[in-house]
Every structure is written in C-alpha cells, then in structure tokens.
Image (cartoon, rainbow, N blue to C red; front, side, top):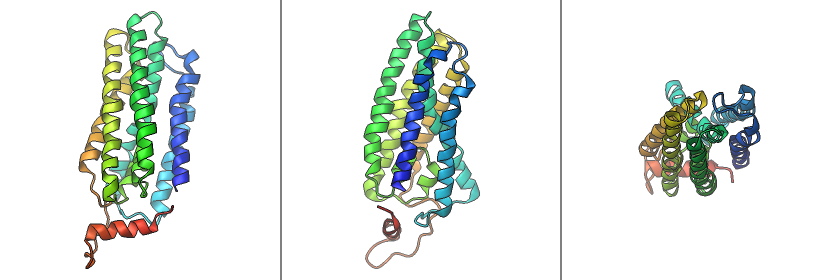
Length: 248
C-alpha cells in the first residue's frame, strides 16, 4: 500500500507542477490555459480517487465504518484540496503571462517564491517525509487528499502531531499566502476566471484543513469501540489491532 500511495503522490506532484510549466507558452493573461491542458492532471485526479475508493472498499485493516452521508461529506470536499496545489501553480503562470503589467510580474515572482517555500519544500518535501514515518499511512493519505480514507484509520499518539502539521502547513504555507496574492492580482491587474477559481478553492481548502486539524479524533471515524482490555484501554486496543494488520 505504501508503494501505491507513493506512486500517486509522485504523479500528483509531477502533474501539478509539470503541466503549468510545460504549457506556459500557450497561456494568455485573460484566457489562461486551454481546457485540454488540464486533462492529464484530472486523469491523475480520477485515478487517485478510484484507488481511494478501492482501498476503502477492500482493505481489511481499516477500522472506520462510515455511513454513506459521512463518507460523502469527507470524500467530496477533498476534491477542493486536491486541485488547490494545481490551481495555485497555474495562477503563477497566468500572472507571469501578463507582460504588460509590472504589478503582475512582481506578483508572479512572489507567488512563485511562496509556492516553492510553502508547497514544494514545506509540504512535498518536509511534511511528506514526516508523513511517510506514520506506519498507519493516514497522514500520507491526508497529504494526497484521500480524506475519507485517512479518517477511517486510527492514529497512534506518535502520529497525531504529524496530522496537525499536515493541515497547518497547507493552511499557512499555501492557502493563505496564495489567496492573498491572487486576490491582489484580481484587484490590480485583471479578472481572470482561472484566478477567481483558484482563490475560491484556496479559501475553501484553508477552512477545511483547519477543521480537519482541530476535529480529528485519534480513533478512526465510525470505528466500533470494544471494551478495554485489562492491560490497556479501548482506544489503545483499536490502535494495536490496526497496527497488527498494517503492511510494512
């Protein structure tokens, strides 16, 4: 399972950054990207979500048992988080394409700098390293926006801080800086539909990340808590049972 998740993570990072860079020559300040430029990213997005559904349906080590409503309330909003990193990267290229505007050019530089520091280094290097150390894979699933799946896994105490870091890094390292700079572009340069969508996604993703960081329980959502063993407690028993079923 770790190998599969790693492959999806690399594909996500590669398309999020690679498509805006390699398609930059065809971008316009007003129209943004051609619609077909986005197809590879959404192909990876579709595969990732199908894998999430498959693991949720067939992995016997999952402790959570979500109702349909609870599952959809976690699964559907995760779409916003997934596309957020991609729309932020496209926003940088769009700003850079506005050659006639010194404001846009300066914003593009700042947007690129904060994206590199907060997303590429902050999340995809530092946070991914921390998440990979979580033996349950829940933090790594959260990093690639498999929110419903991640919530179905109980977090050991050693991984709870990593879960918090994953969400805080997204809010303060990506969503807030990018939303502010993209809003400045819309006010002082030009109203671009891609940029408007990117701001909306960033704000929504930021609120969701904060909510997930604050309200995440150590026990998997929907888990059936059994009476405590003589040596421990109910939560500890669930975590031990799950850990016993984890693949290396």
